[in-house]
Image (cartoon, rainbow, N blue to C red; front, side, top):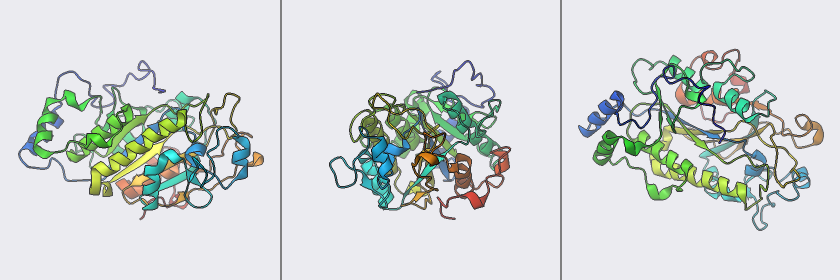
Length: 385
């Protein structure tokens, strides 16, 4: 995974509340757990946004395959996913796009209109650096390296409840992601089991996630813990988890192989989270993101190199699902970015902005995405109004 250099991250104080396994129970979790053991709810149920970062640049053309475009098969003779109906073939979505066969659990949710796809989305910046691409997407300021905080933290800092909810955002891991850096109270949790007070609350309220549903992988464990925390009704609004292994320069594979294993873990985990939360998914929205996509053409080592546009997923909440959204630029050579990549036709800030407004109720996006106007006329209708 392409994590930021911790020396560059000298942020623990500025980031609010960073949690590590030091044997101390944070006061806000202690109070919440005591409320729960008394049979009370710490905070009324509220809307939650879960951001998932696919570190390493996910190949959107293998996840959401344009099987209706012959150029795709011409440019990827060894790693293309076969057309629908063939062995190992694409799971058709709309006659033109389809999902990788390892995404069967998510294909089901697409069919029930709980999941939407946005294709050809990304950053307007030209970088192919993992570090810069991730930094720009998490800060929400493409091309600006001096931004001190993340867009999610800026939302939390300027939302109406900032003075009333002690815990605003939660990241799974040993340190806060760029996305949640800033003055709003956010925490990084590496392992819930290290906090005895949560165990006590867990036995009283049965908030344990269904372990058997989730893959036994870092991503699976992270999402299971987020599900536990959602069930505790602590009032936090934004959660974060990383999914690694998406940098496929060599031996990427097609229906099976290196990438298929990563996609399978990713899909099984998201489906498990959805099942685990049940009707709580009405209040929870999952947004996936990746720093950029990968080249249209396969390389000489049966992989793909750093590209530009990719495909992102939106699941749960009031998702206007069962659709592939965005303007498809085609894979024709003259339509590619710099002659090699899927072009970006949706700025990620427009997608994120629509989600913040319609799901979390943001009223002033200029505070979240400075120097950018994310206006409703550029939104895709990914959520129902």
